[in-house]
Length: 196
Image 1 (cartoon, helix red, strand yellow):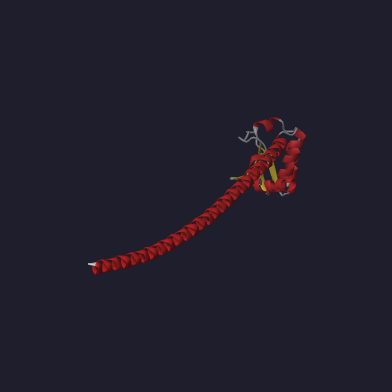
Image 2: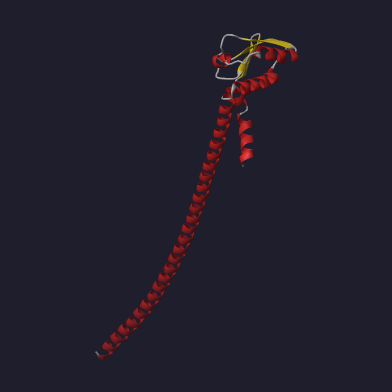
């Protein structure tokens, strides 16, 4: 029996030794898998941090760009408001002149817009009431120099200022409203170039 015990002992010893080798090998594999997993996790974290930093930088850039755009729009809007205020004051100054200055402006406009043939000039009720004495002769002289004639309509036109020229069925609007509307962009450009 002593021989059987010895064989059993040897088998057990070999089994223990084989099991230990298997355990050592399994531990090595587990350590390698764990190390690889840690390395991959570190790479994922690093990649995530870089991606997050890139996204953050892009968002900051977009925010700065958006803020710059809003600032430029606010400045442009403020400039437009200043320009429109100046043009509005120029309009009020022209419309609010005393009779001599106002009708001097009317004569200058008439010279630029007069046509050949028989025409009629129409004024607002307020302007008809303050027409300077002899204005009909001045207007007639301007018309004759252009090869035509001009009479003043005694019926007031429904306009605020300036005048309307009528030649047959054709009307030419020479009111300040029309002149400022026609020249709006040119006036804005001129004022802008003076201011900035």
